[in-house]
Image 1 (cartoon, rainbow, N blue to C red):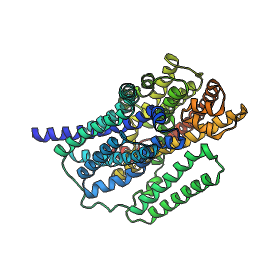
Image 2: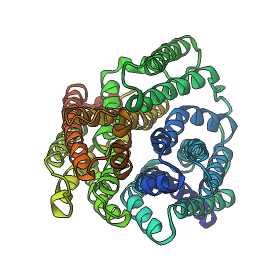
Image 3: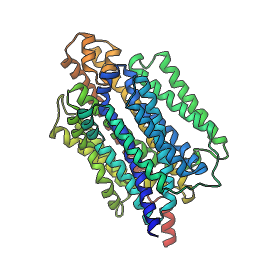
Image 4: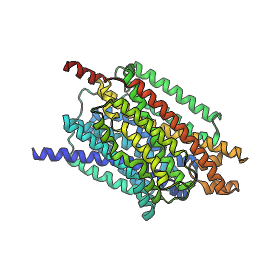
Amino acid sequence: MITMHRDRSLTLLAVCLAALAMPLSFTGPAVALSAIGRELGNDTVALSWVVNAFMLTFGSALMAAGTLADRYGRKRLFLSGVALFALSSLALAAAPTLAVLDCLRASQGLGAALALASGMAALAQVFDGEARLRAFSMIGTAFGIGLAFGPLLSGLLIRQFGWRSFFLAAALLMSVALAAGVRYMQESRDPAAARLDWHGASVFTAALSSLTWAMLRVPELGWRHPVVLALMAAALLLLVGFIAIELRSARPMLDLSLFRYPRFVGVQFLAAAPAYGFVVLLVLLPVRLIGIEGHSELETGRLMLGLSAPMLVVPMLAARLARRWSAGALSGLGLLIAAAGLGWLAQLPLGGSGAPLLWPLLTIGVGIGLPWGLMDGMAVSVVPKERAGMAAGIFSTTRVAGEGIALAVVGAVLAMLIQLGLGHANVPSALAASRLAVGQLTVAAAELGIAPQQLAHIYVYAFQSLLLMLSGVTVLTALMVFAFLRGPGQQEAGAECRAV
Protein backbone atom coordinates (compact mmCIF):
# COMPACT_ATOMS: atom_id res chain seq x y z
CA MET A 1 0.00 0.00 0.00
CA ILE A 2 2.84 2.39 0.89
CA THR A 3 4.58 1.59 -2.40
CA MET A 4 1.37 2.21 -4.37
CA HIS A 5 0.83 5.56 -2.62
CA ARG A 6 4.45 6.56 -3.35
CA ASP A 7 4.14 5.62 -7.03
CA ARG A 8 0.91 7.61 -7.38
CA SER A 9 2.48 10.65 -5.71
CA LEU A 10 5.59 10.54 -7.89
CA THR A 11 3.47 10.04 -11.00
CA LEU A 12 1.63 13.20 -10.03
CA LEU A 13 4.99 14.93 -9.50
CA ALA A 14 6.12 13.94 -13.00
CA VAL A 15 2.97 15.36 -14.60
CA CYS A 16 3.16 18.53 -12.45
CA LEU A 17 6.75 19.16 -13.53
CA ALA A 18 5.73 18.75 -17.16
CA ALA A 19 2.76 21.08 -16.60
CA LEU A 20 5.08 23.62 -14.98
CA ALA A 21 7.49 23.61 -17.94
CA MET A 22 4.76 24.31 -20.52
CA PRO A 23 3.69 27.83 -19.40
CA LEU A 24 7.33 28.61 -18.57
CA SER A 25 8.15 27.85 -22.19
CA PHE A 26 5.35 30.11 -23.34
CA THR A 27 5.93 33.18 -21.15
CA GLY A 28 9.73 33.00 -20.99
CA PRO A 29 10.54 33.42 -24.71
CA ALA A 30 8.31 36.52 -24.80
CA VAL A 31 10.74 38.21 -22.39
CA ALA A 32 13.71 36.86 -24.35
CA LEU A 33 12.41 38.04 -27.74
CA SER A 34 14.49 41.22 -27.87
CA ALA A 35 17.66 39.36 -26.88
CA ILE A 36 16.95 36.66 -29.49
CA GLY A 37 16.46 39.32 -32.15
CA ARG A 38 19.74 41.02 -31.28
CA GLU A 39 21.67 37.76 -31.72
CA LEU A 40 19.84 35.92 -34.49
CA GLY A 41 18.49 38.76 -36.63
CA ASN A 42 15.59 41.17 -36.98
CA ASP A 43 13.27 39.26 -39.31
CA THR A 44 9.91 40.34 -37.89
CA VAL A 45 7.88 37.38 -39.18
CA ALA A 46 10.46 34.88 -37.92
CA LEU A 47 10.49 36.56 -34.50
CA SER A 48 6.71 36.33 -34.33
CA TRP A 49 6.92 32.59 -34.98
CA VAL A 50 9.11 32.15 -31.87
CA VAL A 51 5.92 32.33 -29.80
CA ASN A 52 3.31 31.34 -32.38
CA ALA A 53 5.00 28.12 -33.56
CA PHE A 54 4.81 26.67 -30.03
CA MET A 55 1.16 27.62 -29.55
CA LEU A 56 0.15 26.39 -33.03
CA THR A 57 1.44 22.84 -32.64
CA PHE A 58 0.40 22.69 -28.97
CA GLY A 59 -3.19 23.66 -29.73
CA SER A 60 -3.67 21.69 -32.93
CA ALA A 61 -2.26 18.42 -31.57
CA LEU A 62 -4.10 18.18 -28.24
CA MET A 63 -7.17 16.28 -29.44
CA ALA A 64 -5.10 13.87 -31.52
CA ALA A 65 -2.71 13.32 -28.60
CA GLY A 66 -5.55 12.24 -26.33
CA THR A 67 -6.70 9.63 -28.84
CA LEU A 68 -3.17 8.32 -29.33
CA ALA A 69 -2.66 8.06 -25.56
CA ASP A 70 -5.81 5.97 -25.11
CA ARG A 71 -4.91 3.69 -28.00
CA TYR A 72 -1.15 3.20 -27.63
CA GLY A 73 -0.61 3.76 -23.90
CA ARG A 74 -0.71 6.83 -21.68
CA LYS A 75 2.74 6.25 -20.18
CA ARG A 76 4.29 5.66 -23.60
CA LEU A 77 2.84 8.88 -25.02
CA PHE A 78 3.71 10.85 -21.89
CA LEU A 79 7.35 9.76 -21.98
CA SER A 80 7.51 10.38 -25.75
CA GLY A 81 6.11 13.90 -25.31
CA VAL A 82 8.39 14.77 -22.39
CA ALA A 83 11.44 13.41 -24.22
CA LEU A 84 10.56 15.37 -27.37
CA PHE A 85 10.08 18.52 -25.30
CA ALA A 86 13.41 18.04 -23.47
CA LEU A 87 15.38 17.28 -26.64
CA SER A 88 13.82 20.24 -28.46
CA SER A 89 14.73 22.49 -25.54
CA LEU A 90 18.35 21.31 -25.63
CA ALA A 91 18.49 21.96 -29.36
CA LEU A 92 16.89 25.39 -28.88
CA ALA A 93 19.76 26.35 -26.59
CA ALA A 94 22.11 25.83 -29.55
CA ALA A 95 19.88 27.12 -32.39
CA PRO A 96 22.08 28.91 -34.95
CA THR A 97 19.32 30.78 -36.82
CA LEU A 98 15.80 32.05 -36.32
CA ALA A 99 14.44 29.55 -38.86
CA VAL A 100 15.91 26.63 -36.92
CA LEU A 101 14.69 28.08 -33.64
CA ASP A 102 11.13 28.42 -34.99
CA CYS A 103 11.09 24.80 -36.20
CA LEU A 104 12.33 23.61 -32.82
CA ARG A 105 9.67 25.66 -31.06
CA ALA A 106 7.05 23.84 -33.14
CA SER A 107 8.61 20.53 -32.08
CA GLN A 108 8.54 21.68 -28.47
CA GLY A 109 4.83 22.51 -28.75
CA LEU A 110 4.11 19.05 -30.16
CA GLY A 111 5.92 17.50 -27.22
CA ALA A 112 3.87 19.65 -24.83
CA ALA A 113 0.61 18.43 -26.41
CA LEU A 114 1.62 14.78 -26.14
CA ALA A 115 2.78 15.17 -22.55
CA LEU A 116 -0.24 17.15 -21.33
CA ALA A 117 -2.97 15.03 -22.93
CA SER A 118 -1.43 11.70 -21.92
CA GLY A 119 -0.34 12.89 -18.48
CA MET A 120 -3.83 14.03 -17.57
CA ALA A 121 -5.29 10.77 -18.89
CA ALA A 122 -2.76 8.77 -16.84
CA LEU A 123 -3.68 10.62 -13.64
CA ALA A 124 -7.36 9.91 -14.25
CA GLN A 125 -6.53 6.18 -14.12
CA VAL A 126 -4.73 6.20 -10.76
CA PHE A 127 -6.77 8.76 -8.80
CA ASP A 128 -10.48 8.62 -7.98
CA GLY A 129 -13.05 10.87 -6.32
CA GLU A 130 -11.69 13.62 -4.09
CA ALA A 131 -8.12 12.47 -4.69
CA ARG A 132 -8.58 13.03 -8.42
CA LEU A 133 -9.91 16.53 -7.81
CA ARG A 134 -6.89 17.33 -5.63
CA ALA A 135 -4.51 15.91 -8.23
CA PHE A 136 -6.03 17.96 -11.04
CA SER A 137 -6.03 21.09 -8.87
CA MET A 138 -2.28 20.57 -8.34
CA ILE A 139 -1.84 20.48 -12.12
CA GLY A 140 -3.68 23.80 -12.30
CA THR A 141 -1.44 25.19 -9.55
CA ALA A 142 1.65 24.08 -11.48
CA PHE A 143 0.35 25.92 -14.55
CA GLY A 144 -0.28 28.99 -12.40
CA ILE A 145 3.26 28.93 -11.02
CA GLY A 146 4.63 28.65 -14.55
CA LEU A 147 2.57 31.61 -15.71
CA ALA A 148 3.43 33.68 -12.64
CA PHE A 149 7.16 33.14 -12.51
CA GLY A 150 8.03 32.43 -16.15
CA PRO A 151 8.81 36.08 -17.01
CA LEU A 152 10.80 36.61 -13.79
CA LEU A 153 12.80 33.40 -14.20
CA SER A 154 13.49 34.25 -17.83
CA GLY A 155 14.66 37.73 -16.83
CA LEU A 156 17.01 36.35 -14.19
CA LEU A 157 18.50 33.76 -16.52
CA ILE A 158 18.92 36.22 -19.40
CA ARG A 159 20.65 38.71 -17.11
CA GLN A 160 23.08 36.13 -15.71
CA PHE A 161 23.65 33.65 -18.54
CA GLY A 162 21.92 34.86 -21.72
CA TRP A 163 18.66 33.81 -23.39
CA ARG A 164 19.85 30.31 -24.33
CA SER A 165 20.08 29.36 -20.65
CA PHE A 166 16.29 29.53 -20.38
CA PHE A 167 15.88 26.60 -22.75
CA LEU A 168 18.52 24.63 -20.86
CA ALA A 169 16.49 25.17 -17.67
CA ALA A 170 13.35 23.87 -19.44
CA ALA A 171 15.27 20.80 -20.63
CA LEU A 172 16.47 20.12 -17.08
CA LEU A 173 12.95 20.39 -15.67
CA MET A 174 11.57 18.00 -18.29
CA SER A 175 14.44 15.57 -17.72
CA VAL A 176 13.42 15.24 -14.07
CA ALA A 177 9.81 14.66 -15.17
CA LEU A 178 11.03 12.02 -17.63
CA ALA A 179 13.02 10.18 -14.96
CA ALA A 180 10.07 10.16 -12.55
CA GLY A 181 7.69 9.01 -15.30
CA VAL A 182 9.96 6.15 -16.40
CA ARG A 183 10.34 4.88 -12.85
CA TYR A 184 6.92 5.38 -11.30
CA MET A 185 4.17 5.84 -13.90
CA GLN A 186 2.09 2.75 -14.68
CA GLU A 187 1.11 1.94 -18.26
CA SER A 188 -2.59 1.99 -19.16
CA ARG A 189 -4.62 2.07 -22.35
CA ASP A 190 -8.18 1.75 -23.56
CA PRO A 191 -8.64 -1.52 -25.52
CA ALA A 192 -11.74 -0.06 -27.17
CA ALA A 193 -10.09 3.23 -28.14
CA ALA A 194 -10.82 4.50 -31.63
CA ARG A 195 -8.14 4.93 -34.25
CA LEU A 196 -6.79 8.40 -34.72
CA ASP A 197 -8.71 10.47 -37.25
CA TRP A 198 -5.61 11.33 -39.29
CA HIS A 199 -7.55 13.15 -41.99
CA GLY A 200 -9.35 15.35 -39.46
CA ALA A 201 -6.17 16.04 -37.47
CA SER A 202 -4.20 16.97 -40.59
CA VAL A 203 -6.88 19.29 -41.99
CA PHE A 204 -7.42 20.94 -38.59
CA THR A 205 -3.68 21.63 -38.23
CA ALA A 206 -3.49 22.96 -41.79
CA ALA A 207 -6.42 25.32 -41.14
CA LEU A 208 -4.79 26.76 -38.02
CA SER A 209 -1.44 27.05 -39.79
CA SER A 210 -2.95 28.92 -42.74
CA LEU A 211 -4.79 31.38 -40.51
CA THR A 212 -1.74 31.99 -38.31
CA TRP A 213 0.52 32.48 -41.34
CA ALA A 214 -1.96 34.92 -42.86
CA MET A 215 -2.07 37.01 -39.68
CA LEU A 216 1.72 37.09 -39.43
CA ARG A 217 2.01 38.38 -43.01
CA VAL A 218 -0.58 41.13 -42.53
CA PRO A 219 1.83 43.65 -40.91
CA GLU A 220 4.21 43.40 -43.86
CA LEU A 221 1.78 42.94 -46.77
CA GLY A 222 -1.53 44.42 -45.59
CA TRP A 223 -4.99 42.88 -45.28
CA ARG A 224 -5.77 43.06 -49.00
CA HIS A 225 -2.59 41.51 -50.37
CA PRO A 226 -3.23 38.43 -52.57
CA VAL A 227 -0.99 36.24 -50.40
CA VAL A 228 -2.90 37.18 -47.24
CA LEU A 229 -6.28 36.74 -48.92
CA ALA A 230 -5.23 33.35 -50.35
CA LEU A 231 -4.07 32.12 -46.94
CA MET A 232 -7.28 33.27 -45.27
CA ALA A 233 -9.38 31.63 -47.99
CA ALA A 234 -7.38 28.43 -47.57
CA ALA A 235 -7.98 28.52 -43.80
CA LEU A 236 -11.73 28.91 -44.35
CA LEU A 237 -11.90 26.10 -46.91
CA LEU A 238 -9.86 23.80 -44.67
CA LEU A 239 -12.14 24.56 -41.72
CA VAL A 240 -15.20 23.68 -43.82
CA GLY A 241 -13.42 20.51 -44.93
CA PHE A 242 -12.61 19.60 -41.33
CA ILE A 243 -16.27 19.99 -40.31
CA ALA A 244 -17.34 17.82 -43.27
CA ILE A 245 -14.83 15.11 -42.29
CA GLU A 246 -16.00 15.09 -38.68
CA LEU A 247 -19.69 14.93 -39.66
CA ARG A 248 -19.04 11.86 -41.83
CA SER A 249 -16.78 10.09 -39.35
CA ALA A 250 -18.21 7.24 -37.28
CA ARG A 251 -15.78 8.11 -34.47
CA PRO A 252 -15.03 11.82 -34.92
CA MET A 253 -12.12 13.55 -33.27
CA LEU A 254 -14.47 16.49 -32.67
CA ASP A 255 -18.05 15.53 -31.84
CA LEU A 256 -19.95 18.49 -33.25
CA SER A 257 -23.25 17.28 -31.77
CA LEU A 258 -22.07 18.61 -28.39
CA PHE A 259 -22.68 22.12 -29.69
CA ARG A 260 -26.41 21.40 -29.41
CA TYR A 261 -26.07 22.10 -25.69
CA PRO A 262 -26.28 25.89 -25.16
CA ARG A 263 -24.18 25.73 -21.99
CA PHE A 264 -21.46 23.85 -23.87
CA VAL A 265 -21.37 26.71 -26.39
CA GLY A 266 -21.09 29.15 -23.50
CA VAL A 267 -18.11 27.25 -22.10
CA GLN A 268 -16.30 27.60 -25.44
CA PHE A 269 -16.71 31.38 -25.23
CA LEU A 270 -15.30 31.17 -21.73
CA ALA A 271 -12.38 29.01 -22.89
CA ALA A 272 -11.39 31.59 -25.51
CA ALA A 273 -11.73 34.64 -23.25
CA PRO A 274 -8.35 34.41 -21.45
CA ALA A 275 -6.60 34.29 -24.83
CA TYR A 276 -7.35 37.91 -25.70
CA GLY A 277 -7.98 39.21 -22.19
CA PHE A 278 -4.83 37.84 -20.55
CA VAL A 279 -2.54 35.55 -22.57
CA VAL A 280 -1.75 38.06 -25.33
CA LEU A 281 -0.53 40.47 -22.65
CA LEU A 282 2.02 37.90 -21.50
CA VAL A 283 3.65 38.41 -24.90
CA LEU A 284 2.79 42.01 -25.81
CA LEU A 285 3.67 43.65 -22.49
CA PRO A 286 7.28 42.38 -22.38
CA VAL A 287 7.69 43.56 -25.98
CA ARG A 288 6.50 47.04 -24.98
CA LEU A 289 8.41 47.22 -21.70
CA ILE A 290 11.72 45.92 -23.09
CA GLY A 291 11.71 46.89 -26.75
CA ILE A 292 9.87 50.24 -26.61
CA GLU A 293 10.33 51.62 -23.09
CA GLY A 294 13.80 50.24 -22.44
CA HIS A 295 13.21 48.24 -19.25
CA SER A 296 15.59 45.38 -18.51
CA GLU A 297 14.47 41.77 -18.81
CA LEU A 298 14.71 41.34 -15.04
CA GLU A 299 12.68 44.47 -14.27
CA THR A 300 10.08 43.39 -16.83
CA GLY A 301 9.83 39.97 -15.20
CA ARG A 302 9.12 41.62 -11.85
CA LEU A 303 6.45 43.88 -13.30
CA MET A 304 4.76 40.95 -15.05
CA LEU A 305 4.21 39.31 -11.65
CA GLY A 306 1.40 41.80 -11.14
CA LEU A 307 -0.45 40.25 -14.06
CA SER A 308 0.18 36.57 -13.38
CA ALA A 309 0.63 36.23 -9.60
CA PRO A 310 -3.15 36.32 -8.91
CA MET A 311 -3.32 32.97 -10.74
CA LEU A 312 -1.75 31.38 -7.66
CA VAL A 313 -4.58 32.43 -5.35
CA VAL A 314 -7.73 33.55 -7.16
CA PRO A 315 -8.64 30.21 -8.84
CA MET A 316 -8.76 28.53 -5.41
CA LEU A 317 -10.87 31.40 -4.07
CA ALA A 318 -13.22 31.03 -7.06
CA ALA A 319 -13.69 27.34 -6.29
CA ARG A 320 -14.80 28.22 -2.77
CA LEU A 321 -17.13 30.99 -3.95
CA ALA A 322 -18.72 28.59 -6.47
CA ARG A 323 -20.14 26.60 -3.55
CA ARG A 324 -22.51 29.49 -2.88
CA TRP A 325 -22.85 31.29 -6.21
CA SER A 326 -23.27 30.20 -9.82
CA ALA A 327 -19.99 29.34 -11.55
CA GLY A 328 -21.29 30.99 -14.73
CA ALA A 329 -22.11 34.22 -12.90
CA LEU A 330 -18.71 34.28 -11.18
CA SER A 331 -16.99 33.70 -14.52
CA GLY A 332 -18.91 36.50 -16.21
CA LEU A 333 -18.13 38.83 -13.30
CA GLY A 334 -14.46 37.97 -13.57
CA LEU A 335 -14.44 38.86 -17.26
CA LEU A 336 -16.03 42.22 -16.51
CA ILE A 337 -13.31 42.88 -13.91
CA ALA A 338 -10.64 41.93 -16.45
CA ALA A 339 -12.24 44.26 -19.02
CA ALA A 340 -12.09 47.10 -16.50
CA GLY A 341 -8.40 46.34 -15.92
CA LEU A 342 -7.69 46.41 -19.66
CA GLY A 343 -9.42 49.78 -19.94
CA TRP A 344 -7.44 51.07 -16.97
CA LEU A 345 -4.16 49.85 -18.47
CA ALA A 346 -5.03 51.67 -21.71
CA GLN A 347 -4.88 54.98 -19.84
CA LEU A 348 -1.22 54.64 -18.86
CA PRO A 349 1.14 56.90 -20.82
CA LEU A 350 4.58 56.08 -22.19
CA GLY A 351 6.99 55.13 -19.42
CA GLY A 352 4.39 53.91 -16.94
CA SER A 353 5.92 51.56 -14.38
CA GLY A 354 5.82 50.69 -10.71
CA ALA A 355 2.54 51.19 -8.86
CA PRO A 356 0.69 52.91 -11.75
CA LEU A 357 1.28 49.81 -13.89
CA LEU A 358 0.89 47.27 -11.09
CA TRP A 359 -2.72 48.03 -10.15
CA PRO A 360 -4.34 47.56 -13.57
CA LEU A 361 -2.27 44.41 -14.09
CA LEU A 362 -3.49 43.03 -10.76
CA THR A 363 -7.06 43.88 -11.75
CA ILE A 364 -6.73 41.93 -15.01
CA GLY A 365 -5.10 38.99 -13.22
CA VAL A 366 -7.81 38.84 -10.55
CA GLY A 367 -10.56 39.11 -13.16
CA ILE A 368 -9.20 36.28 -15.33
CA GLY A 369 -8.39 34.22 -12.25
CA LEU A 370 -12.08 33.84 -11.36
CA PRO A 371 -13.11 31.88 -14.49
CA TRP A 372 -9.68 30.22 -14.71
CA GLY A 373 -10.40 28.19 -11.58
CA LEU A 374 -13.87 27.16 -12.74
CA MET A 375 -13.58 26.53 -16.48
CA ASP A 376 -12.25 22.99 -16.46
CA GLY A 377 -14.97 21.73 -14.14
CA MET A 378 -17.68 23.51 -16.11
CA ALA A 379 -16.39 22.01 -19.37
CA VAL A 380 -17.43 18.53 -18.26
CA SER A 381 -20.47 19.45 -16.14
CA VAL A 382 -22.48 21.06 -18.94
CA VAL A 383 -22.88 17.84 -20.96
CA PRO A 384 -24.08 14.33 -20.06
CA LYS A 385 -21.54 12.45 -17.95
CA GLU A 386 -20.82 9.83 -20.59
CA ARG A 387 -19.63 12.54 -22.98
CA ALA A 388 -17.41 14.39 -20.50
CA GLY A 389 -14.15 13.10 -22.02
CA MET A 390 -14.89 14.48 -25.47
CA ALA A 391 -16.12 17.75 -23.93
CA ALA A 392 -12.86 18.16 -22.00
CA GLY A 393 -10.82 17.53 -25.15
CA ILE A 394 -12.75 20.10 -27.17
CA PHE A 395 -12.49 22.61 -24.33
CA SER A 396 -8.70 22.22 -24.06
CA THR A 397 -8.30 22.56 -27.82
CA THR A 398 -10.48 25.68 -27.90
CA ARG A 399 -8.45 27.25 -25.11
CA VAL A 400 -4.96 26.49 -26.43
CA ALA A 401 -5.70 26.90 -30.15
CA GLY A 402 -7.57 30.10 -29.31
CA GLU A 403 -4.46 31.44 -27.62
CA GLY A 404 -2.38 30.84 -30.72
CA ILE A 405 -4.97 32.44 -33.00
CA ALA A 406 -5.41 35.39 -30.63
CA LEU A 407 -1.66 36.06 -30.58
CA ALA A 408 -1.50 36.13 -34.38
CA VAL A 409 -4.64 38.24 -34.84
CA VAL A 410 -3.84 40.73 -32.08
CA GLY A 411 -0.29 41.13 -33.39
CA ALA A 412 -1.66 41.91 -36.85
CA VAL A 413 -4.15 44.44 -35.46
CA LEU A 414 -1.41 46.14 -33.41
CA ALA A 415 0.80 46.46 -36.50
CA MET A 416 -2.15 47.89 -38.46
CA LEU A 417 -2.80 50.48 -35.73
CA ILE A 418 0.89 51.41 -35.67
CA GLN A 419 0.88 51.80 -39.46
CA LEU A 420 -2.11 54.14 -39.21
CA GLY A 421 -0.20 56.19 -36.64
CA LEU A 422 2.85 56.33 -38.89
CA GLY A 423 0.66 57.45 -41.78
CA HIS A 424 -0.82 60.26 -39.72
CA ALA A 425 2.74 61.32 -38.88
CA ASN A 426 3.63 61.26 -42.59
CA VAL A 427 5.89 58.25 -42.09
CA PRO A 428 4.20 55.54 -44.19
CA SER A 429 6.09 52.28 -43.76
CA ALA A 430 4.65 48.81 -43.34
CA LEU A 431 8.08 47.43 -42.48
CA ALA A 432 8.54 50.01 -39.70
CA ALA A 433 5.13 49.08 -38.30
CA SER A 434 6.12 45.41 -38.29
CA ARG A 435 9.37 46.19 -36.51
CA LEU A 436 7.66 48.30 -33.87
CA ALA A 437 5.07 45.58 -33.28
CA VAL A 438 7.84 43.19 -32.18
CA GLY A 439 9.69 45.86 -30.18
CA GLN A 440 12.47 46.80 -32.62
CA LEU A 441 12.32 50.51 -31.86
CA THR A 442 15.96 51.42 -32.53
CA VAL A 443 16.07 49.45 -35.80
CA ALA A 444 12.89 51.14 -37.07
CA ALA A 445 14.13 54.59 -36.02
CA ALA A 446 17.44 54.06 -37.82
CA GLU A 447 15.73 52.89 -41.01
CA LEU A 448 13.31 55.84 -41.02
CA GLY A 449 15.80 58.44 -39.81
CA ILE A 450 13.48 59.87 -37.14
CA ALA A 451 13.68 60.14 -33.36
CA PRO A 452 12.97 56.93 -31.40
CA GLN A 453 10.85 58.92 -28.94
CA GLN A 454 8.44 59.90 -31.72
CA LEU A 455 8.06 56.29 -32.79
CA ALA A 456 7.60 55.22 -29.16
CA HIS A 457 4.66 57.61 -28.77
CA ILE A 458 3.07 56.26 -31.98
CA TYR A 459 3.47 52.71 -30.66
CA VAL A 460 1.97 53.51 -27.25
CA TYR A 461 -1.04 55.24 -28.80
CA ALA A 462 -1.65 52.16 -30.98
CA PHE A 463 -1.18 49.90 -27.93
CA GLN A 464 -3.74 51.91 -25.97
CA SER A 465 -6.25 51.63 -28.82
CA LEU A 466 -5.66 47.88 -28.94
CA LEU A 467 -6.27 47.53 -25.20
CA LEU A 468 -9.59 49.34 -25.52
CA MET A 469 -10.58 46.93 -28.30
CA LEU A 470 -9.63 43.94 -26.14
CA SER A 471 -11.60 45.41 -23.25
CA GLY A 472 -14.69 45.72 -25.46
CA VAL A 473 -14.35 42.13 -26.74
CA THR A 474 -13.99 40.90 -23.16
CA VAL A 475 -17.18 42.71 -22.14
CA LEU A 476 -19.06 41.11 -25.05
CA THR A 477 -17.73 37.70 -24.05
CA ALA A 478 -18.89 38.29 -20.47
CA LEU A 479 -22.40 39.02 -21.76
CA MET A 480 -22.34 35.80 -23.80
CA VAL A 481 -21.25 33.87 -20.70
CA PHE A 482 -24.09 35.38 -18.66
CA ALA A 483 -26.55 34.45 -21.43
CA PHE A 484 -25.41 30.86 -22.03
CA LEU A 485 -24.26 29.71 -18.61
CA ARG A 486 -27.39 30.26 -16.57
CA GLY A 487 -28.76 27.49 -14.38
CA PRO A 488 -27.18 24.12 -13.50
CA GLY A 489 -25.27 22.00 -16.01
CA GLN A 490 -26.33 18.60 -17.30
CA GLN A 491 -24.61 16.63 -14.54
CA GLU A 492 -25.59 19.16 -11.88
CA ALA A 493 -29.21 19.07 -13.00
CA GLY A 494 -29.19 15.29 -12.91
CA ALA A 495 -27.85 15.34 -9.38
CA GLU A 496 -30.57 17.75 -8.30
CA CYS A 497 -33.28 15.50 -9.81
CA ARG A 498 -31.90 12.45 -8.04
CA ALA A 499 -31.79 14.37 -4.76
CA VAL A 500 -35.48 15.22 -5.15
